[in-house]
Image 1: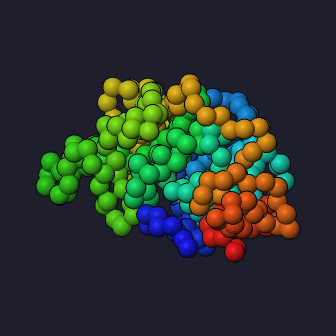
Image 2: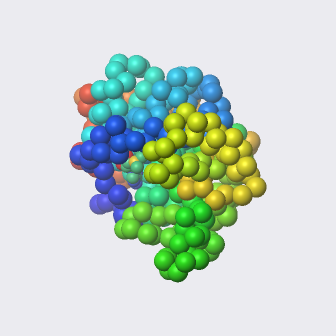
Length: 300
Ligand SMILES: C[S@@+](CC[C@H](N)C(=O)[O-])C[C@H]1O[C@@H](n2cnc3c(N)ncnc32)[C@H](O)[C@@H]1O
């Protein structure tokens, strides 16, 4: 029996890498996101997970970590990441749904989520999962699409847009694509005991005429400076926030890692290409093939 979860924006078989990034004039966005990430993420550590890692665009930023989980719903994008990163044993490729994270509690020191929250129909449910798998004192670096951005404010003022950029609730502007208000994000993070701290505003100059006329390096430098005002006001299309998990709480038992996404029982070693849930009431099995741990659907 499968458990009901909110709808998922499915990138299986998608050409996201070539359609959206490679040669698509988004070097500026890529650069400024890396600047923000480096400012907020502890540069070294033991365990890091990127939630919605896609084809591993940002994976080279995690070289200071001993174990890096690239987690995504799309097996095909994870296979692209694997092909690109080669045999580096620090990377672990895990397919699954962020509403049912297949990890033991208190595992990750650093959690990173960039350009994916806009697909979360139930962000509070996702945050509950992340709070469960974060270690005491862990850091969660989240990027989200900001509904209170300058363009939305202008469109609203000119009556070209019905929804208010100032109201707290998320807006679904296209099916399964949401913009969020920074105030609402902070509230929801606090609900699950994350303490939202430093905010950076990012991609201030995401405007085609500017990007065409000015050198990317200049725009990136200007954005890098503007990011620092993020704690005071947030009018950019993209916002990064770093939240700390409480210092006291559950830490993963050494040598445990995966947990059954259905019943959360810790899983043991891989046997014959499968992970077996030892809970007699569950007994689900999960496939492990060519280095990809697959928790999307049980194999039996
Ligand atoms: C726009 S892409 C961003 C990829 C990557 N973070 C980047 O910036 O290049 C959004 C990613 O979120 C993933 N995603 C969407 N819903 C998900 C879910 N419920 N569980 C896990 N991943 C999900 C998609 O498969 C996709 O790879």
